[in-house]
Length: 225
Image (cartoon, rainbow, N blue to C red):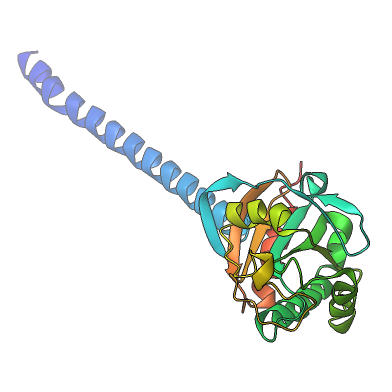
């Protein structure tokens, strides 16, 4: 009887250990399945990455209201609910401004499926040179008349907008501006992407790849509430 108890004392813990190891093995296998499923889901269902330089954390876009070439007042806040590509141009620019306008036309052509959920906005950096007529001519020359909303204003109206978006322009003083056009204006060239909630999420350089801007507009258009 004593030997049986001894045997019982030696064999029973061994069985419990085998059961415990078996349970740990099943738990490890289940955990591996959960991790694998999570990684698969992340790879297949995570939103595409933004291509431009991402602002972390996002910044609330400074609101402004300015007239377009037809005198219609347009505010950035009125575009809430859309994803907005915001840039800064002048109509007599010999290099980057025409390039940006041409690229915007190309991007617009890729986003027909988004309908009116995307807006393209340009703010003048040449208050004297960007007249209503020169803006109309610029938009027509680059096939963006019905695509790009081009806003103008006096130096006093434009300076706060430039400052809040870190845009420099040597046309800030009307005496240094185009005075009817023709003078080269040194200015910051950048494109901001503002999400439907009014947050600046991304910025791109003037020579951006149209595919990158199109990607970021698509991704952020999906965040509309």
